[in-house]
Image (cartoon, rainbow, N blue to C red; front, side):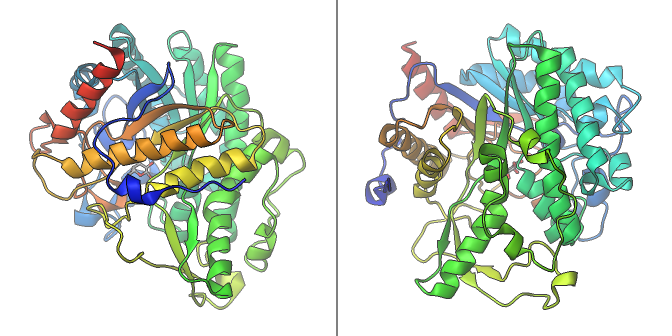
Length: 471
Ligand code: FCB
């Protein structure tokens, strides 16, 4: 079945929220390194992002997450914001190096206490915690031993997951193993734009595989530690890829990008196999010798839900490889050039605003994977570059249009069980290699003082959520 999205009406979608099923979860999301700061407090170990941020030129403005929104100390402000917004859920991540400063071995009780207090405060306010275990901050000690290139890191991840699940399982029901393994592997180990800043071929593909293996092992570990109550999923960033023109070469380029970005992750996790054409894409780049019998069974362990992060659609054109010799080529060098679509509005970061891509992503998943678990949109959001809490109508329109695309996808295909939407992000924060310029928050953060100020979009969303509940 092929479903199409009526773009014309979406472009003029009123700033109202669509009807959603009863029990739909409204939430917002953040991640540890982007908001916590306090990187050397209470025995936290170093993460690959602490190290990467010190590399000259790696991060805009030579910024780092050393202070960020200081949520390690100001978490009560964040919980107040959440309660004021009236969301059902908060997706945040646990910093592995706060719990196990060296990635393994000795546990830091102070690190666990921080999340323990946060979870308590959320539960007291009736906000359901969705805990992401890995949002990119690998303990540097593990990177020093090879990081995600090595199988050992997958085992260490499962141990860490078990530890956190055991500590919080009495109050946390919803667990997300990994956030966007594409970014951790391809952006971090092949493009070098994210920590650890490597530009490898084989190593990056090994990292992707070991992240997925770590996910599979962590699902089993969380269920063992947290019992039948636990609901476990993974969050993938998915972007439909559109050929820039109708030419065979551009179509082939779009297919290659789809394999690298989307299907390298969706197919093993949801279908138990790497996609056709994947080995051919990387012939000469890697012999894929990191794969072992039994891995795909572990990776495709049935999930309680899938988290989808959607920001934009990609437009791909054929291009020469930057490195002609496959043996020296990075895994991101697949002969594709991304092009900006004409006539499409963009966010402050220049990302095309195309809610149709969310519709296509959701209906595509439902069509391709017969056992697709329930889906949450675990991230979706837009950034502005201005530094003030002035009205942000572009954010309001962005949320309304994307929610409407998601609701239409659920209405169009009853195989899609859409359970919730988390806006990225609750507050402005450290936007990785882009530093503090882009502001994704529903609340503005004054980084000099730490003060949070709700933006117009915060009030708008609060009113819509309230109206939904008939309050
Ligand atoms: C996603 C990340 C998240 C945030 C948004 C804008 O890729 O998961 O941490 O940076 O992009």
